[in-house]
Length: 219
Ligand code: SF4
Image (cartoon, rainbow, N blue to C red; front, side, top):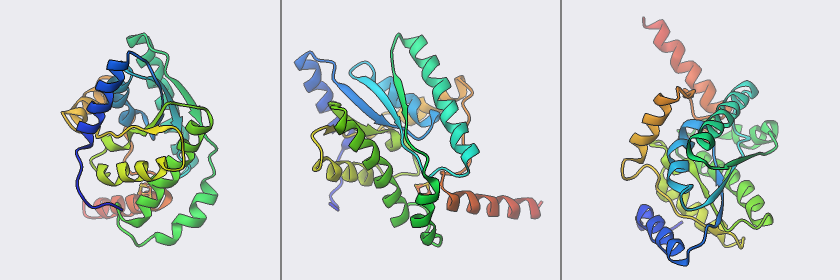
């Protein structure tokens, strides 16, 4: 992977300016993991793009949590479309969490953000990107650059690497910049969106439970 730091927010603005000059409204497939992380990206992208959300998240465990996040996202899209006169659609991918765990559970001892997480980003993005390419979307990107816990440099580098396989263009982003993160929190509170307490996979869930039990024991 490249190590030089890039300003991906600036790159997103350069691409948007180019699209505006061309006077087009391209299609964009947006990989999304949950409602709170989709709030600001939708506000940022829909004035420029015809957006379709791809819910490609086999990592999320247990299934109840997967469905909770999915249903909250569906609820938010309905609100967003109605408030903004938009027509954002959602496509749900197969929930093959068992297969996901067969590979990822071996990395239990790694801290969040390390190799396991980078592989997880890549897997989810690649599945969604492949779909975007097969369905002739103009652009593909992920909402994950909104998260404080996720490194935008790594996410964009993964996007760039994946783009070499596909015709669909990768849209660089850093949604947390220029107060994007503040706006997402504002919208989350305004619409009382369910805010998950752990990242998503079985490992992050179990580590969260252990942490919780330690907190409860010390009370
Ligand atoms: S902690 Fe989050 S990003 Fe890392 S592997 Fe688990 S679900 Fe994926």
